[in-house]
Each structure stands twice: as C-alpha cells, then as structure tokens.
Image 1 (cartoon, rainbow, N blue to C red):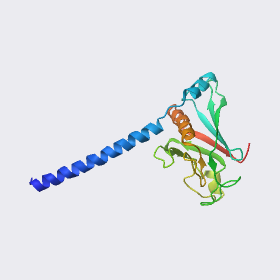
Image 2: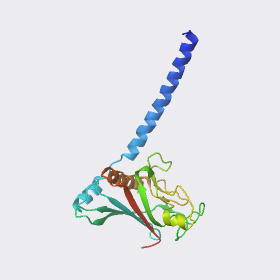
Image 3: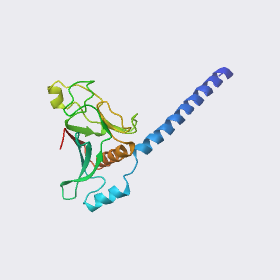
Image 4: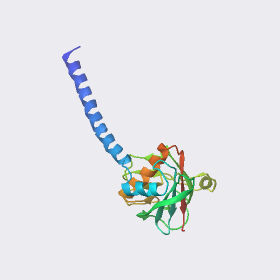
Length: 191
C-alpha cells in the first residue's frame, strides 16, 4: 500500500471516528432525556394509591379546560387519576381536526404504541397521538405528525412544558416496559 493510500484511509477512519463521537454524545443526551425518572413525589403518590411505575396508563385531554390527565391502573385493576397538567398551548378551537393544515388539535380516541415515542424530537420529547384513527380516516379527516410535545408551541399539537412532557413521556415509557402494548389517549372538547 502506498503512503498516500494509507494516509487517505487514516483520514477516512479519523473522520468516521469523529462523527461517531458526535453521534455518541448526541445519543447520550437523547438517552438522558428519554430516561429521566419520575419525581419522587409522583412515585410516592403512585405507591399510596396502589400503583406501580410499570402499571398501565391512560391519558385524557380536555381542550376547553386545557387539562392533560394521567390515569394509572391500581393493583385492584381499576384506574384512578394520578395527576394532571395544564396544557401549555393548543392551537385551533374546540372541535375535531378535519384536514391537514387547519391547525386543529385532534379529538377522539387514539392508540399510542411504542414506535410513536420520539426521544429525538425537536420539541424536547414527544409522541405521536395516532391521528388519524380509523374513524377519522372513514370521515375523510387528514393530517400527520400531531404530537404531544414540549417547547410550549403548537400548530395542531398538544404542547406541554419540557418538564411536563418529560414526566408524561416517563409514564408511557414505564408502562410500555411493564408490558402495556398501547396506551389509550382520549381527547375531548370539554369535560
């Protein structure tokens, strides 16, 4: 092998290692966000109510009241309200989303699965709501990438503060790890 070929290969390897190092650092930052533990206060509240961190979870949204509720299954099999958050920003008005670009946040019943969780979100952390569901599609409703996310900015999403979305994300993550295959998201115009 000539000196120039050897030098070229060394440069390529060095460049790949440099890129890999950046990606590793980025991955560690993403992993830290996505693995943030629930605050001790919430863990104690779960224990007091007969819940575990990995027990199934259900999310409810009330648009008019700007509320995002977290319900968890208790050891007796019944669900109980664990905590609620004030939604930071919702775009649009009361009523369902009809078409891409109408800036409406969805209303209905949606299934959130593990593949919809997004630790690489531009909005701190996020997960896709699952819009459009089968009902929406049958009624010709269109739209994509409608999320629950951080950053308090919305154009059809349910936007939370970064701290709130980290907790909500942790509830979902822990429930998936406990064996839950999909999380129901119920989005209502009002209570």
